Image 1: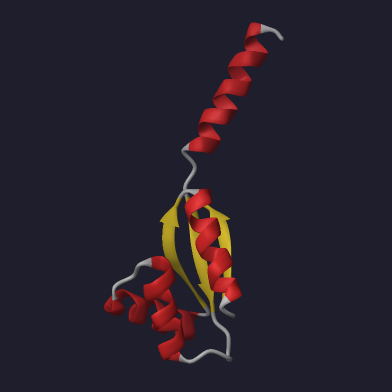
Image 2: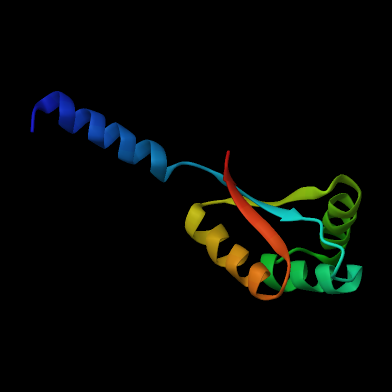
Length: 93
């Protein structure tokens, strides 16, 4: 592999390591406010006030950024939210 190719590969790897992701909660008309709040506290380590605010934003705007971080951290949270019946996606920032 040429030196230039090695440098490009290294740059690409380093840029993906530091990439920030966003966990997004989407509104559904199924789950109660209390269930969503309790789930955000339990899964995302929100305090009750933060969880309530995210729930209200999601209800009125259709979605809300609920957590920022690495892919690995957020992917496991998203899977747990989905397992509990909430609608969530990950997006790169």
